[in-house]
Image (cartoon, rainbow, N blue to C red; front, side):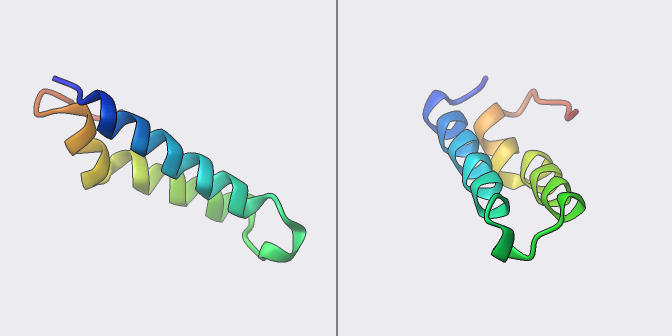
Length: 57
C-alpha cells in the first residue's frame, strides 16, 4: 500500500529535479531531465513510497 508521506517526498524530489532544469545555466538537457525523473520514479524511493504491490510503470 502506498505511503502518503513518502509519496509527497517523491513528488517534491521530482519537482526539485524539474526546477534544477529550468535555469539556462543549469546545463541540464531535456533528455537528462527525463532520465533523472525516470530513474527516480523507477528507483528505490518510488518502491518505498508506493509499497510492495507496485508493479512499476
